[in-house]
Length: 187
Image (cartoon, rainbow, N blue to C red; front, side):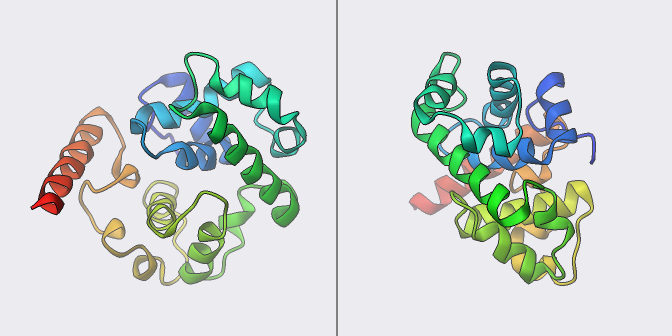
């Protein structure tokens, strides 16, 4: 995998760069929470739980796992509910991909197939699926035929989403883009 710098923390970014489930979980957590903190969440889970193995997470006691995710500093502002989503995601990775998170994208034949697989994951709506597909293409060079069609504007050059965060400067540019987009939507 690539040398990602989304969390802006060396330990968290190393995990995102080497563990596909960490990257997928970071994307799941990226909602109603600062982007870099969401992507730092998997490192907190790994430290507290001892693993990011989807099978172990899927099998964990839900109350214990929720406590672990909600303990300050929490993995998300809604730590307990996101813990349930993380376990749900882990269950799908185990049942549909034999616990091999990377298989979600390495075995996809087309961009449409890849998008559909991501969209079918728990907690991944249409926009999040587009962004994650773009992130895979832009940062991990996962570019099945037609990926630009399914990602829309997120596949274009620029600073629109987490797919475009490669360092501290790009994080600021993405944040500015999002702020401007929200302001324009209010008009």
